[in-house]
Length: 194
Image 1 (cartoon, rainbow, N blue to C red):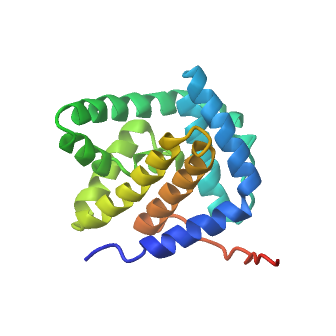
Image 2: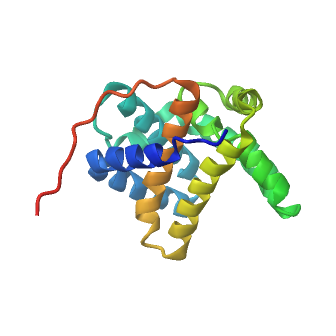
């Protein structure tokens, strides 16, 4: 059975983005600046993921300042980045397929780490979620959506300002839909009047 929620998840991603556009765009810019400097990049990214998941739980608005407010995530973010990044990079160098498989296997690890687990627990739990699902096509389709968003961001430098926050929100929705860990309060419906 394929993941029939991708279109709904895409709409929910866009609605969440529109509701929190200011915080997500500014937070995304800070994350990008962190990656240019390298050292704070993983930390800023994990902080923004954590802010997204908390705002989804509470119904609050994303604060872009949360990107650098959470001091306790620095070592966890680097541990997760190295523990995932090196094997995935090696996997992509070995004919791409092993890298894709590891990416699917650890799809939820960043969100599990943002949700309070240690880096090793997040990797192990993400693997358990993947094995329990038995519907790997859904994982692949969700990974493909994230890969397309990343590719769009890679095409032009300016598009990454939009695709980075969208990717993080989509990843948070994949996680919450898979684990049921986040209950979503109903967001106010925005209508555009011309």
